[in-house]
Every structure is written in C-alpha cells, then in structure tokens.
Image (tube, rainbow, N blue to C red; front, top):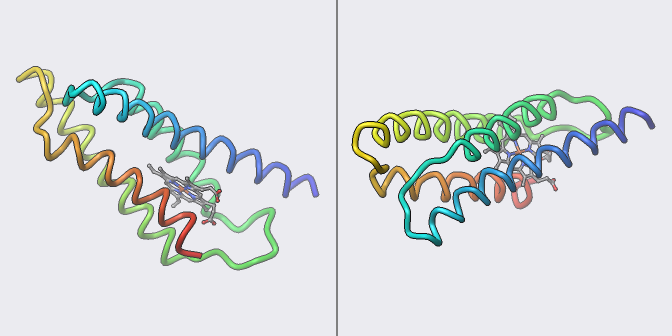
Length: 119
Ligand code: HEM
C-alpha cells in the first residue's frame, strides 16, 4: 500500500519532469528560437532520476517491459548528448543547429509515447 502510493508519487514527478523538458522546448519552438535552456536540462534530469527509479520493480504487481525501458534509456541518453553538444554550439555560435533543436522535441515526445502506447 505505502509502496504503491510512493511509486505513484514518483510517476507524478516523472511526468512533471517530462512537462518541464517538453514545455521549455515548446516555448523556444513557438518563439522560433533554436535555443537550449537550463530548464530543459532540469526537466531532463528530473525525468532521468525518476525514470531510473521507476525502472526497478517495486510497488507493482505486474511485470515491467524491460525492452521498452531499455529503449527509453537509449532515447534519454541521446537527449542528454544532444543537449550537451547543442549547448556547446550555442556558446560558440549563439544558437543550436535546427536539426539538433528539433530532435529534442521529437525524442521527448517519443519517450512519452513509448511510455503510454507500448505496454
Ligand atoms: C526524457 C525522458 C523521458 C520522458 C519524456 C518520459 C516520459 C514518460 C511519461 C509521459 C510517462 C507516462 C506516465 C504514465 O504512465 O502515465 C512515463 C512513464 C514511465 N517512464 Fe518515462 N520518460 C523518460 C525517461 C524514462 C527513463 C530513462 C526510464 C527508465 C529507463 C523511464 C521509465 C518509465 C516508467 C517505468 C514509467 C511508468 C509506466 C511504465 O511502466 O511504462 N522513463 N515516462
């Protein structure tokens, strides 16, 4: 009972991490700025820490889909690498190459889609 509630709280924090990462990205996209912001890194970090905690089988009575979780981890590492490379380019050139910028939005939506569509 306590473990179930605790897990649901971690899922809640995980969704907040997603919202912060995607929201921060969407603000830049709508403003037509190919910029990476600190809020994107903060959202990604929240999603990463809580996602890793959720990848362990506690507080549930069903089996986790570890193939899906492995794919989500690879996507997360790609997001981290792209945010890192893009931030370096941004420091040197003032903005992020648009392919790198768009891939953050796409990969973030991909990970959210994998979570809810692939059971
Ligand atoms: C940027 C990276 C990520 C994003 C945007 C993201 C997004 C989401 C979203 C939107 C949900 C839906 C919650 C629900 O079920 O209602 C979710 C669930 C979940 N995520 Fe992530 N996630 C990310 C990374 C990760 C990582 C790295 C892991 C672990 C390897 C992970 C593990 C999980 C687990 C275990 C759930 C619970 C539902 C399930 O079992 O599929 N996530 N994620």
